[in-house]
Length: 140
Image (cartoon, rainbow, N blue to C red; front, side, top):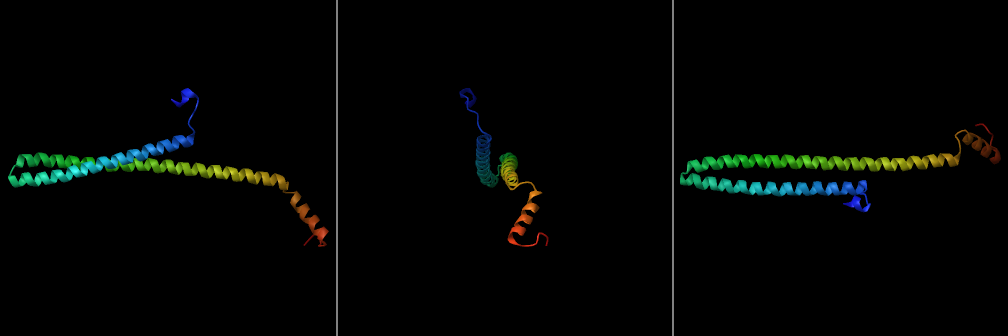
């Protein structure tokens, strides 16, 4: 939609938007996992209640449901870990890019300084001239 109005998102805006989406996905996965864990506890209570009543067929069905629920909890934990890994990788890439930009600025500053000071061959001549003007011997 932004492209229709001529505004294109910068890489920083896209990065921030993607990081927010990843954080939102992690929160949603956590919420779903917590719901499944609550359901697991409820199933355990129901299994115990049905076992006391002697309804073994219902207990078997609920036990299968319990195993399925635990498997889903594991899957949600794995999915969250994968999303978090992607988020950390993006953060690392952002840090590396910031470092590269800083080094680029340092390189430009050093090149400018070298141009202002002059070529490397002029420095010994300047030092020799200063020694002569101070009264020191040109060679030490």
